[in-house]
Amino acid sequence: MPTAIELAEQFQASLVGEASHGFIGLAPLERAQPDQISFLSNPLYRQQASDSAAGALIVSKSDLDFLQANPSENSAKRVYFVSKNPYATFARMAQHFAKASSPIYPSGIHPSAAIDSTAIVPASCHIGPFVQIGAGVMLGERVSILGNSSIAKDCCIECDTLIYPSVSIYYNTQIGERCIIHSGAIIGADGFGFAPDFSATGGEWVKIPQTGRVVIGNDVEIGASTTIDRGAMSDTVIGAGTKIDNQVQIAHNVVIGNCCVVAGCAAISGSTKIGNFCIIGGAANFAGHLTIADRTTVSGNTSIIRSISEPGQHYTGVYPSMLHSAWEKNAAILRGLDKIRQRLRLLDKNKTTES
Image (cartoon, rainbow, N blue to C red):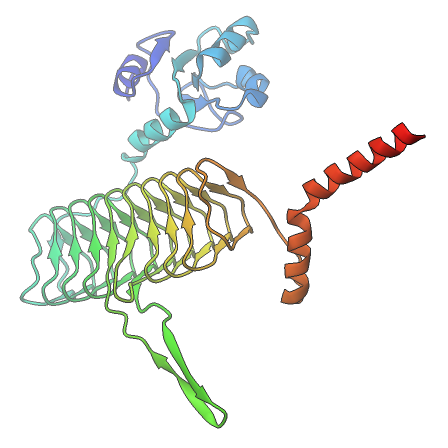
């Protein structure tokens, strides 16, 4: 059981309270007990934090000042971990405690796994039951691939990456270190590329070969049942540190920068480039061939149909469905509403002056 001083030193927090107090884990404010740690990152919950039975709280300096000025019966023996970013400190501390209960995947290859003789699989890797590994695959040290996953030819998966059951990784995909890929994800399927060839009497959609790759940086997490299509001729790229939720669709040639977050059911059309540190809400969608500036935030269900050049802006917008021609007219009116308001104010001012 780690003590308060050990945790404070490990997670670079200032300690206020009994240094030898030990803790078994973390819990929400309303459920935490004297041997558990909780956190406060929103001032709206200050009173709940004050009343909590938690033996320790992760707080900011301003929240600590409030709690000490408004003590409760539980405050006397409480420990405080003071951090500039309590939420991030909570997340890192939660990782520490979670390791004790997380599954351990021992090194070794299950007898039912099918591994091509040309694949490179270090002895430190864990290969689960019915895993398929194709020709020319290269795995780094301590890679874990769980049951029923398929790694096609010429893929490269770097050290300490964890692949959960029933993941399909198509040929020539590149995956960095310490990535996590959840069940049902499909990486490297063909992008949706077809050329129309029609006449008055018939025709067809001619498939465009998808010969690019998917390249995924270090420390990327990909949610369950998410699909990332391979590039048509260039690569689809996911930057280091990016986190992608469940059931997200990322089309061919998309480039997502470093340390972005993409929430569930978002869809990014082909050849769109997302900058670094962007936040994309659930079910947001992007038209193809756009460029999105760094640190852009897009609210859930928002449709982005034009490039965004100014960094650090937040976009929100949900339209009811209507005929496209009517939608274009309404959108044009909405874009000019501010100018129309200014003209109305000027007209009203002139009318008042004349009267």
